Amino acid sequence: MKNRTIFLFTMVAALMTLPSLTLFADDDNDDNEDSRFSAEIFWAKGHDQDRHARPRAATDSSPNLSWHGGNIMSSVQVTPIFWGPNWGSKDFTNDKMTGLQTFYMDIRNSRYAHTSDEYTDANGVVTDNITYVQNFMDVSPASSRGNRVSPILAEVCKLITSPSPNGYYPVYVDRPRGSAGFCAWHSAGYCGATPVQFAFFFNLDGDPGCDPEDKSSGHSQGLAALANVSGHELSEALTDPRLNAWYDSSFSNNNSKWKIQGNWSNNAFNAGTGYPNTRGQNGCIDGN
Image 1 (tube, helix red, strand yellow):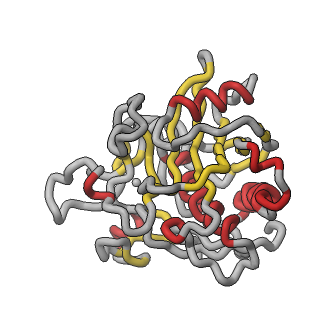
Image 2 (spheres, helix red, strand yellow):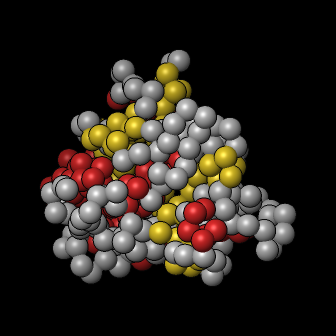
């Protein structure tokens, strides 16, 4: 672990140690909020996560994550995709595109990147080997709703002609969240025969339900909100890239600073350390 960190990480009121694997059908009925996708979801503040989660065996069951046999990602290559015509406008883009590039370039050397390195598979361990590759912009109209996996995967496959097996493709659309109960999610699929890991993010400008209320980093509210959920989804992609690895029983750089939701640590919970999740169970860590 590095001796110095310049990232600021704080848990916000969203899903972290509640059941993070939520399975829904990829249904064509976009008007049905419960007909969604197979993905791990970052819920908005105040949304009833337990209504969508798999039932727990008991209310006092362990919140620790269990390995379900799938692979983790010991290294990851990040290629963001910015989708929608508004990304071509400087007024809309503001600091978001360049800020997210800085975020992904700097997170490799942060203490936050080590909050997931206790999670392993049969072949390796999660590390801070996170590499920013480049970004792509597509100013065609983005998918109208974020509740389906298939159009987001199709966008990834359209733009990434030679995907990497350890690639991670976060897709940032220019559409607001509206009435959707979530801020972001990550999932997995195939482009041809190549497995890909990808994520979806709404435009969170002025969105109180997905705002980490970051007053210290100097970023715009929209960038701060995207960085918060981006850190969380990246952590989940590393520890559970194909939705079959780690989840619970029912989840020196360039002097940049970010406020990002913490991660669950089995080690911290078992040792009685860390800070509490939304159920009051100590085990959250943020690298500080």
